[in-house]
Length: 111
Image 1 (tube, one colour):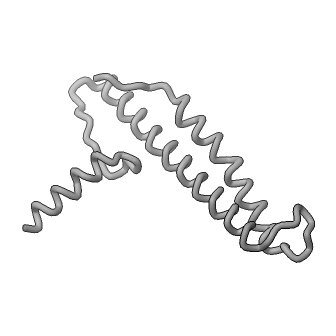
Image 2 (cartoon, rainbow, N blue to C red):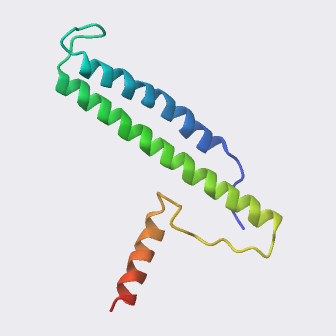
């Protein structure tokens, strides 16, 4: 089975999510206190937009880290137990092919 047990990529995704979460909090606070102009003078709408954008990026990084760690765990299990077969499940959040296959299966079963 060709897979990796190196956790560098999921670790980097986790590390990348942390500043995004911090930016989300900072800009959310700026949006609440936009009239006081403490951090930087910016409109409430812009602060909210930046906060939402950084939250979206943090969510993407966390989803990628979770998926990567799941795949690494499956790879390690497959290497330790040679008879174990990889069963792709819905937990692979970013696995577009698996999502498409599941939707096609559901559509054919409902006919």
